[in-house]
Structures are given as C-alpha cells and as structure tokens.
Amino acid sequence: MSFRITCPVCGARSSTEFRYGGEVPENWREVWRRDNPEGPCRERWYHEFGCRRWLTLVRDTRTDEILSYE
Ligand SMILES: [Zn+2]
Image (cartoon, rainbow, N blue to C red; front, side, top):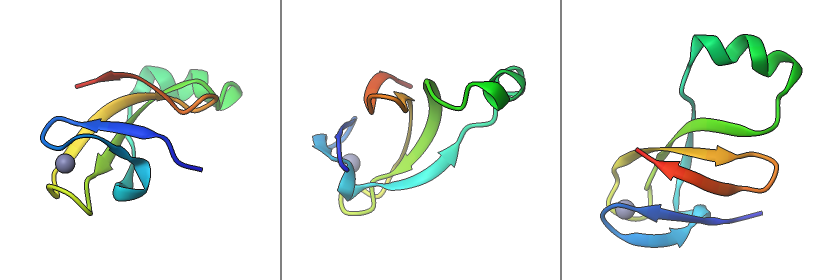
C-alpha cells in the first residue's frame, strides 16, 4: 500500500520512494498510544530514491493521510 509524500526538495512522490525511519519518540504520546495504536503519528522518512534527505511528518496511520510536515 502506497500513498503520497510531499518531499520539500522533490515535491509529491510515491511513498515507495521513501524508507520508513521510525516513529519520533514523544513521551507524552507513548502512554496514550499503548491503548490507541492508530491515529496521528509523528514519523521520520528517508527519501531513498530521490534527494536522500530525511524529513519528519505527521501521518494518520488509519488513512495514510499526511496531516503536516515539519
Ligand atoms: Zn526528495
């Protein structure tokens, strides 16, 4: 399953060009997410088949919609 990620350098690309870099730890969220594993999640992604830069975004894991970029 793929979705669109807008790279600040390359523009909108398929998520298949990116490598998932894990969730950005947020202590206040860890407690909440134990019971609510789905929903908005702050993550790092690496544009492996593009500019090879890291970006941080907030993704809703239920819909794969990108809510915001940092
Ligand atoms: Zn890029």
